[in-house]
Image (cartoon, rainbow, N blue to C red; front, side, top):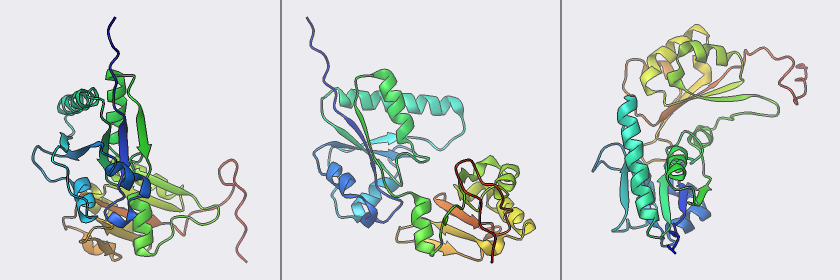
Length: 258
């Protein structure tokens, strides 16, 4: 009779978008629980933004912390190999019986690597228990930092990666009161042109590396045309011209302006 493998838990600890004071008490406790740290990098030996958030919070990096490489590429084969390696390494460490805490910038359930990693790990080892610790999303922090409101009363809110393209963004601008465009860097000039065409530049705000020491808020979004911006950037766009009528099922009709 063989003994069953006792796996540690895989914990996704959301750290918020950059300000260590936004790390929740639950995530802070997980970081200090004795679990082994895993942290993501784009290339081997690169710095980790998630790790830097914790460092700014005053926690020392454990000597046995392990980096996992998640390359920034659209090459499907390269991505699949990287994910397979990361998941296999994670399962290997979990077999030691010790919990692993994976450091996630922002919120672990929103455009994050943790969900995919956890899914592949469970495919390799279905017995693994997974815990996700929620956190502050970048767009919620950006709205607070810029003094903007994402949605009021029965207003609608859309959140989409800018990589979907201007045609999709154009359609969504007509459907939502506020649109959050994530990872806007590669599409910034095209989005600026679209907002200019729709007369919405005055209702847009660009936020880069929210919560970090070098956070940048730009309200004159047109001034960014032709300039390079950080990958960790987003646009908040409010559309005051959206036609309101019968809202989505379960919502009441908007009251006419008095």
